[in-house]
Amino acid sequence: MDKQKIIELIDSNAVKAESVISEKIKIWAEYELFSAYWWLGVALTVVPWVIWFIFRPKYSTDRLLYVGLMVMVFSMTADVLGDQFALWHYRFNVIPILPTYIPWDLTLMPVTIMLILQIKPNSNVYLKALLFALISSYIAEPIFHWLGVYNPKNWRYTYSVMIQFLLFLAANYMLKSRNEFEQIR
Image (cartoon, rainbow, N blue to C red; front, side, top):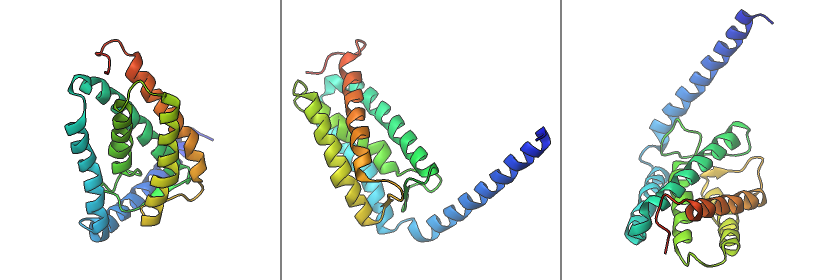
């Protein structure tokens, strides 16, 4: 296939994607924006950060935010991939152009992990990782599914357990292994 034909195919695909995104924004503006689900998403985006800000150990703020940023990047990347490969999708987005659920990726995942990490920091990390993985996979995901926000089209909650477990262990490793920050107490 020649270069011009490839360019035409790519451009045609981009036009289709732009049309779908434009339609998604119209639906969001007309039906989702300022709905109860939208306000729930805004609250889930803001309130956990306020709680974390109040209860965080001030001496470990930088270290915990570093870990939180890593969790955000991983969560958002995984959500984009899951959406693009039709494993799941989200409804009632806070921001319409992202295929992820902002409250989950930028707040609930990182803040929950940061809070759990700072509670009894010397306790068994594998137990904490397992509890986090089980609660997020078998309680949080089903609640969002029941609410209609999350649609696990080709995904089972069980698939998330190992991912959440490893994510927590990676976050713990980053928290405890970095020498540029003061150790968590």
